[in-house]
Image (cartoon, rainbow, N blue to C red; front, side, top):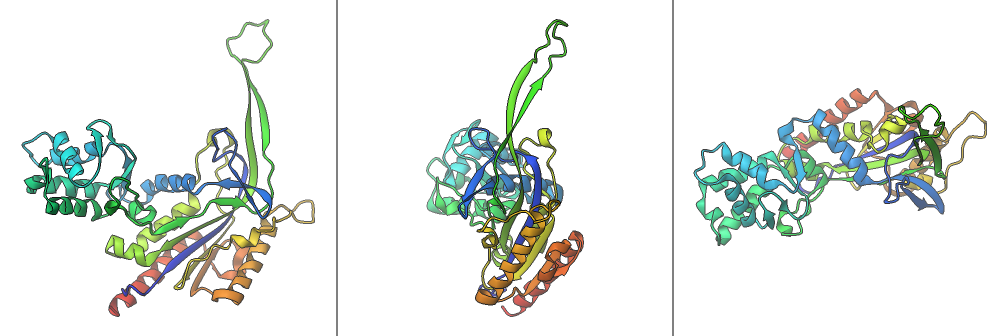
Length: 369
């Protein structure tokens, strides 16, 4: 595939969420943001990406995913143990990770910051330590360091390639993210509410009519606009193979996951009401501008924010296409609310169609190389 060929998958979602507190700030309140001069409900990108990574465990084989942990010495040591290595596995693991440029506090504590690493990378480091004694010397050569860093960068896990890796100890170990996830915000104004609750002590004396516990939980409800994009051409390079399965897994997880904050309290796990997936070859486009002016509920008493949000989104999207960059090369929709913007398909068919489209484009791009 030509490096000049660009493929961006944009995913736009409208999703109603009932009373909930799925993403809290440091005071325990639901996160909010001011947009268009109005307070909106907000779910941070970090929160939703964590929910997506959790769902990845049900979508991708475990060996294709990474672990974000400080305890990377143990990961590498476990791989060394299977190589009939004569030395101490933990000490050897610590030495080769240090050679790669990472600062290891101790075998037990590992790194100062969380490190994102795939099982394949841990295995590559173990193999290198076994085959090249230079990489575990107290003062390794420049070539040994380059070899160790190469092992830590090759065979990235799908989630490492998608979400990236930042390494303060040595920027050479950084991995650029191929995906971006926006903070989700409500399409309308919100006001947080409080649930006052009491709990009864089941073993309290009969003459004690008071509550065993009293408290409050802050919450809100909203119709959210959610957006994510994947640079398929970059993912293709990092994974060194067909990225269509990874892209479709990302889209499925983005649509079907839900952060778990206060989920036992509110049982708020919903699915999207409307989805638009587009493919562009110029640049990704976040269409949140549709809601810079807060949406108002429908005029009739039985209309909420969803239909008004969908109408505003369709109108804004058409204007963006007309006035700026033109229509995408490929558009698919799940849910009837956005039927004016693409072919309506059930989610599984949408993913199958998307996978086939990506494979065809990447195959054709490869023939031009």
